Length: 283
Image 1 (cartoon, rainbow, N blue to C red):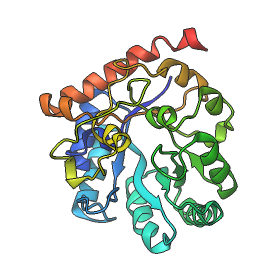
Image 2: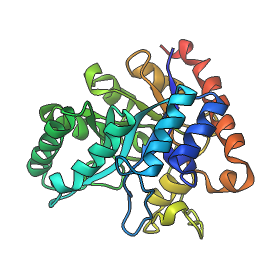
Image 3: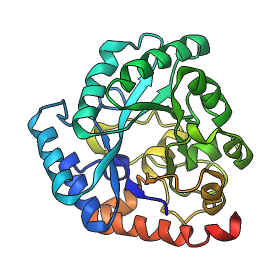
Image 4: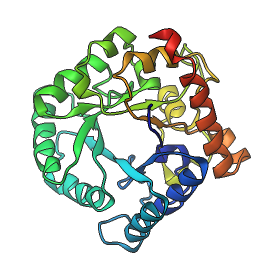
């Protein structure tokens, strides 16, 4: 069976210790934790290794039996180097994380490959494997392009249901991946077609930014619960290696404001379980 985790972006208003508590009560198996701000000017939880919040998160992980699978977020640009990623790796190692989410923001693909390889070399010394996520509004936007960079760098590919659709990748692109390149699948739902317009909420959690483009606004504030949209989620789960962990990444500003954190977490888990119940018919 697939283990199911709760990505921090789903409930970014919760601190990491709070996230662990809600995820455990809702019935998740693991969490993902944002230990570094993802957008310029975004506020950051004080999750440096050894900080009080880091220690409290570790305590709650121990008490609940949950674990941290992935940490985020590192944007790999032209100037990114060890000074950027070593504090992130230290923070993740303190939590027992095994993967680090990264995005390719450097249009120079050879330089990006070299940067990712250097990151991977450092990360593997603390038991963490970087995962390069193809994101529809970044230079590396397709599954095939991410794999072509991640594989020679020794990294993996982080698949996200929304970005697969919006970036123009296909289920065949997913099926073509070496199974070793797929440590996790991030799940959400959405309309098949990109919306013509989406309102940007006045208040994104932690001061997170979106530049106003529909792709960014949708990804950060308007994702749908699994089963509430049109994405071929059952087919996608059937296309990845069997028993790959699934991470619920569903920032939805409307539902987050209407429901308690626990209710929202439970609804997400219930929706994904209903999708999983249909996977067998799509194998």
